[in-house]
Length: 193
Image 1 (tube, rainbow, N blue to C red):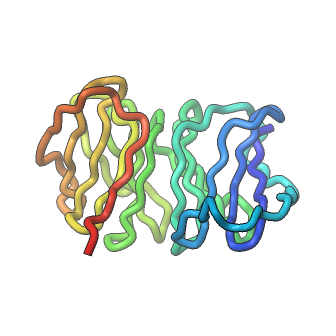
Image 2: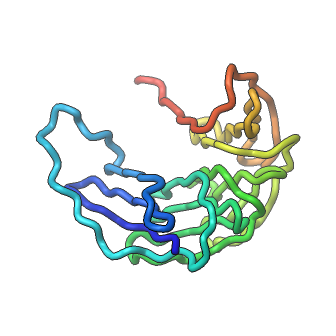
Image 3: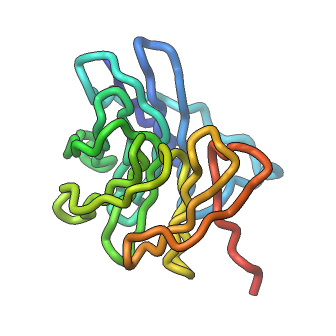
């Protein structure tokens, strides 16, 4: 079975995804901060009981955390769903059909989750956890990141050297950016004040 295991140490919260008992990915959320490398060593992590996500083996791709709602959003590629896990109750709360999925991003201001698929970007309502829209792209959508300052979603063209720029309010492509490689992960770095 595919299981999620939550680990805790101090203020850091880690979610470890396991597939057939082999560690695949660890996501750590530290209350909006990055742990200080010069700080005292962390306590030994202890595993909580697993959160069972699916009884059948399936492939997760990318994941995101909706920190405000305390949810883990996992793209289930082969199942064609967005798996939503409540991290407080430690239970899956939804399997939203979106198509063969990959990247995930959160737009908290407009209440949307964006999920990359092989045909474009699915839009999932953050409150109802239902698919509410779709943005067609010229190829499969992969890694993505949402920039709340410009209401822009940057989406990687899977295994290609370009990003699509999507207006997240109007749900449409407004530009393309050529990049030197095929991005697998992206992050928005805020401008210093």
